[in-house]
Amino acid sequence: MLRDRPARLLLGLNNALVARGSGDEANPRPVDDLLWNQRLVERAPELRAEWFRFRTAGGRLPRIEDVLGEHQGNTEVWGAGLLWSRGRPAGPLLDRFPLTVDALRQVPGLRSALWSVLAPGTELPEHTGPDAGVLRYHLGIDCPPHCALRVGDVEVPYRDGVGILFDDTAPHAAWNRSSVERVTLFCEIERPAGWPASAVNRLTHSLLERDPRYGAAPERATAWDRSLNRTVG
Picture 1 (cartoon, rainbow, N blue to C red):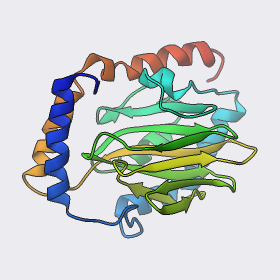
Picture 2: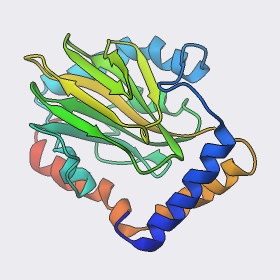
Picture 3: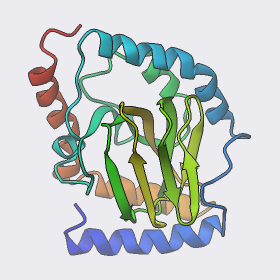
């Protein structure tokens, strides 16, 4: 999507406007006082149980590059289970994760969400995201020791039932240096920016999301699910 010059220019203008509208904030952001985070944290045990029911039944996820259509720079395997796209529930997993989808409905400004699974030894080297109009949120679901996210100079370990909210346009990296997989619920949430930046931000994303390559993620996820999970209810 961002290979097109008009899209890059539009996103660049929106980034500058949103950054001015949201001010200088800590990164990662404080989350403990956010009501939607509190609700997700409270429901984390049932989301974890729902995840393990899927895994125990033999459920598998495609690689994230197969869902998004391009490699994300990770070493080893990064699995992705799409749950939300373009601001609404989407993908083949909705019937398998009703409690998780219901919990996600409580997140204001949610643009996308997926199960994010880093295989043992997977590293996501330092990089920067292109879109200041959303914040990234990771809720720990099954997080062994030696798994962490680093944003700038701040390193945050992944913990079960703990949320991390950050602006991914800052340099950041993530890793799973354990011997088992690391599972989080990964969300992109509209960045609070005040008026009129918030309105421009929504319009920008509605225009960018019309790109058919972006919109193809649910179809890719469905095709992979048919291949990987034919016998999983």
